[in-house]
Amino acid sequence: MAVFLKAFMLIFFAEMGDKTQILAMSLAAKYPLRKVALGITIGVVANHSLAILVGYFLGQWFPEFWMGIVAGLMFIVFGLLSFRVQDDEEDGENKIKLSIVMTVAMAFFLGELGDKTQLTAIALATEGAFPLIVLLGTVSAMLVTAAIGIAIGLVLGKNVPEVLIKLASGVIFILFGAFKLIEVIPTLQSMGVQALMFVLLSLFSGVFLQPTYQLWKDGELLPMQKMAAHLKVIKKELSEFSQGACLGEDKCGRCAGVNCVIGQTKLLIDDLENKRSISYSLELLDQSLKKGFNTTLIIGALNQILLYRREHPEIVASRSKQFMEIQMRFELILFGESSHTESSDAFAAWLKSRKKEITNRIIV
Image (cartoon, rainbow, N blue to C red; front, side, top):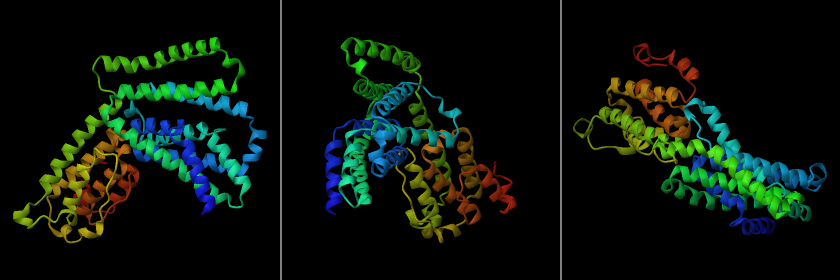
């Protein structure tokens, strides 16, 4: 326990207010919470595992000079790419999931290469006989400080215009990269050379940021704003289906809320605009499934979700668990069981062995 606390406290106080926490704050303002959290966890665990397992030899295999250059350049590239306006609708769901998670993971992994926290982890591992405990302590501290940054980032994401989030995020990445390069390359420590470097980076930033600025200036919606607008429409459409399918208290008696399949579905739909997702037990629904809901409306609702998966994969990917939970409940009403799959091919195969009078009306 003493080893864990020592590792945790050293890293925690070293990281409070450090670039890693600021980076977490910036990413949380741009991307879905679950993907940011997963990416941070992957990056931190990979970095600190590397530090503890091969820390002593790392300096011989990868000199600090080259590690610093790679990390600095990667941060600058991430920063420039942050300025771009991406047409998310052209990207597939799996690509989106991978790009966000891996971008965050790589940012944290590279950002900590040769950093004081990685060096601290190496030192702690060499002086103790419990490397796994040291790893747990250092990773826990990193995740706690990142969580604080994420909490701040979520508030910014809701209250700050997207164009400013893009600008701030890109600038943070570029500054981290520039300072990393200045730190490891002696010729960049001249004031004149630094001024020239920042002028060039500013010019590149302007080129990458110009399309985003033009969209904002013309009053067009940026990707995050488009997604929010689409989500409002989707939520309204699904709410109308579920409301129409509800039998009402005159036929059903007192509303059962989470004990009713439609009640659960309504709550899940109401939560669609949030990045968090709430789970409800399917075991509570046995009685409500016998009520005889409007099959035509439920088929329409299921077809809408399948349509969203085809036409707005980026939106479904950003709320994948919530959409799956809603879809499962519509399937339960129609078939008495759920497919438990987001894959269109797997769903089509699952439908083949179900009631033809229903499956013939489902568009896959």
